[in-house]
Picture 1 (cartoon, rainbow, N blue to C red):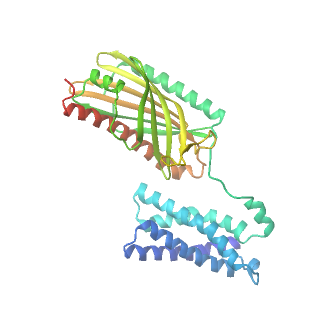
Picture 2: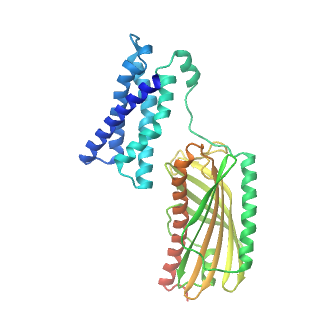
Picture 3: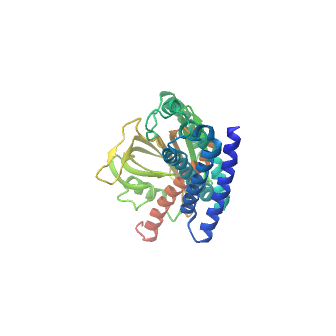
Length: 370
């Protein structure tokens, strides 16, 4: 059975890959380039055995071995290298696994895809090649669908109703442990996170005044630039250039409407809604351009932020609740990618609060507040 032969060759290639990785790590290599070299060694090993055994009935005496080797490297080799590097980085960076163990898991994660590519393209017949290949691949783009917007609007409505009830109950001491979840909706994902920070020495009056008159905030990892577009006594319209990084880094030009409400002398809240989110391609270069809707990656479609400010003895509690909307993930990839997505969301909300706290703590320390 061909799949059995494929599996045997794969096991031998796997052992070779692990041996090469171990040798290169022992020689002082970083685990990612070591993974790339080891995978290529396994790819060449596997190609020879597939030629002479797995697909021997199709290749024995047939010309074009060099062409098949090139296709094998461009398809199975490319997916193996990219997949192994991505999964290895995920398993090492997210779960803290040993690089050799991470390599073993990465091999398992890419085996099925490689068999399908090899069977239907590299060693397949010409008719199958045309049928399967079809044409050159394109970078993945995502379209925001009406059913996704409807589900988002419904979720926001329910969440905001709950927040209003909490506001009427007054201020409480929030938890400083980030808490969040990933909600699957039609063709999309809602990222719902909540976190808080305490700013010692601050007062609610000074905090709100600083938020309504931000001036030039200090740099923040997620924020490349910001400016106020309009201001009233209790609202702001601001432009923010955001950057989001997971496996890739994506830049956005965004505009936000912020409204502040004072509930009591020691308790206030604000609501921020992104009214414009545009993905920027080649940001910061001469080729910079805005991607059209449906042409973007779909990593950030909507962004709402809800803030609460509670003055207590010694400072102010600042609580942030964030709702964002992104494209969905294939169900097979979701269990693997969801932990990475959640980590990025958790770190993003933590950085936002830490940057805010640092800014106002600096003002307190500098005695710029009476």
